[in-house]
Amino acid sequence: MSSADTIQRILFEDADVRGVVSRLDDSYIAVMQRNHYPPIVRQLLGEMLAAVTLMSSTLKFDGRLILQAQGEGALRLLMAECSHHHQVRGIARIDGDLPDAHSFADIFQSGRLALTIEPSQGQRYQGVVPMEAGSLAACLEDYFSRSEQLPTRIQLACDGTRAAGMLLQVLPAAQGKTEDWNRIGLLAETLKVDELLALDNEEMLYRLFHEENCRLYEPQSLEFHCDCSKERCERALQLVGRDELLQAVQEQGGTIKVDCQFCNEVYIFDQQDIMSMTHLDSPENPILH
Image (cartoon, rainbow, N blue to C red; front, side, top):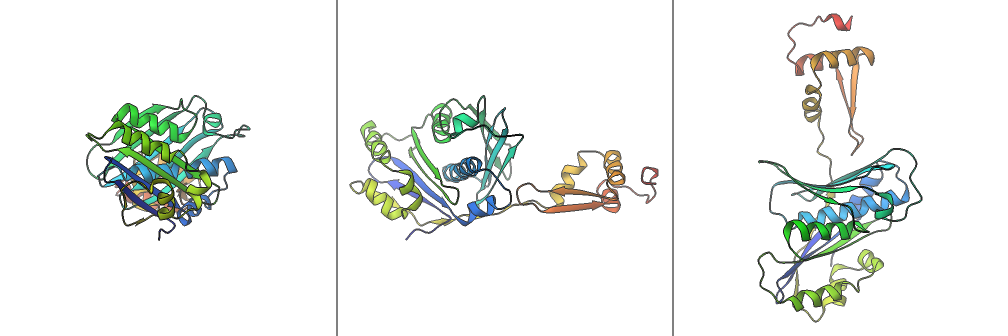
């Protein structure tokens, strides 16, 4: 039986189609409890988290996949990440009062959607798609159509307490018949939001595809995890410059506080930390006196 906080791959043996189902319960709550988001933001960020877990399953790399939606309105950013260890985190940035919006299209006017592949080694890759469709799922389908030329169907759901998603996609370089993909896509369209959120994976796939030769792989666990650290904060602070850091230490009462917006962890740096990270040899510095 499928459990919460899992990602589970699907293969249609006779149709050159693959898929994946993801469910986030505790991992979704772990993201939400660190910030107080309005209901519409909780819903959209949940869809983002479900989407990034689905898309991570289609890639073979060590590193992380980052999905960002940026807009010019009060909701400035939605960001969700998933690593190759199936560890997720996410955040929203709000500047001002949100409009009376009820959909992705309403709240992200003049926005853009960016998908970033950040491997542990090697160069980052980013693809950007204008948010011209009416939902996050439709925008991502558009991304796959433009960048990968792979017919893809994505369904996402979030009710404010949990999130789920399903992705179906033609296999790369597949020579399957178009009617196979059309048939499976039409069956997938009958899936309702409450079914995606509530049904066990096996039951859901049986209801949809019981006439297909469909294999469901063993589930893999998803969990919330933030990989922030004092060392990573140090590397970021070093980009600011020694003099500015020492000035900030003086102005802020002897320490600099850096807080992670993903997990609310706070890292504190004092004068000695600044001296060490910037390779200062002398304990005396006139800017601190």
